[in-house]
Length: 350
Ligand SMILES: [Fe+2]
Image 1: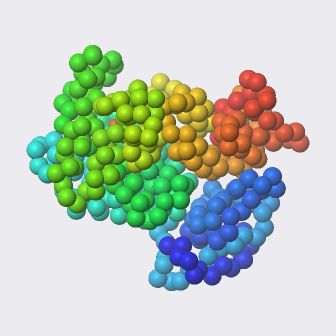
Image 2: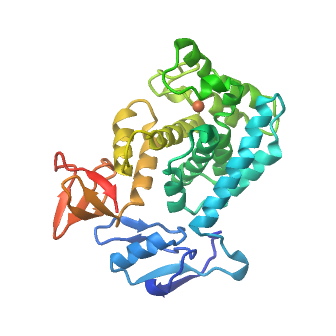
Image 3: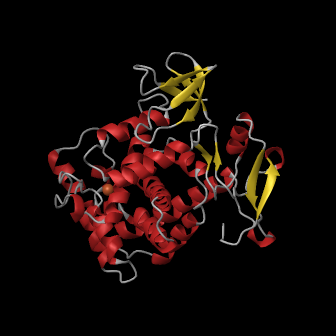
């Protein structure tokens, strides 16, 4: 997909269809990115371009044997299927069998196919899920987020594939933790928490025996709960001592946990999650990774229509990379800079 020598064609937005690939990044009048090069068009993006009055865009000329299965439904179906396959993998380990590497590779290959899909990944991850399915769904989500992070951090394809696999396997050690502790509702005792904290080591031990899994992935799994200030586990490693894969998994892991942890919340806007990511993880996560993540993920919301807590409806026109949770919103003919408007927040996306 999206190979180097692709020809570009200019097309009227009204003639474009979901699945076509954007050949040149589209900016709004404020210089903010609306859709990046390489993105596959979907109905949401098409509606957005239309709303913003953009008439023509550049599309990659795809040859016939390159038909991309692109719809949100196709993504969702593949996503659910992958979760089922990965469930089997974890089940095998919990019954003492070895990892079925073929299954793991099948899942990671099919994740990698979606590398140019952004919106569907982000919105699929944000959906409420079944508590019992948490570990499988979470592994799948972290894998997808690690892929996006790899892409946003400009890694090469081989490294991104490694990220996909590391994300998928990061919590594999949880299959060695008794389910009554793992799925316990309510607060854990100290002993139970100490047991849960062993999962990175269990995961490392499972993977290190497998010559097909690279040492970097093993280390990434071992260190994904370490934190920049040394407050993590299992060893309390800090900063430079933490492997890069582990730093990336940590960001994906925390974001997915934050978006899923809303059983008692009504609907939380992604901007509230960004705000928490900005504030609560300060000093704990690698700023390079967290910035790449927030800047890129937030840019999907440019051009979106939002409802503010004042009841006003507006359009997100610009997102400052330093304050992604407080964008510039156009309401009627006035502009509200949420970094300056104390107390004004985005309640929901419309
Ligand atoms: Fe974990």
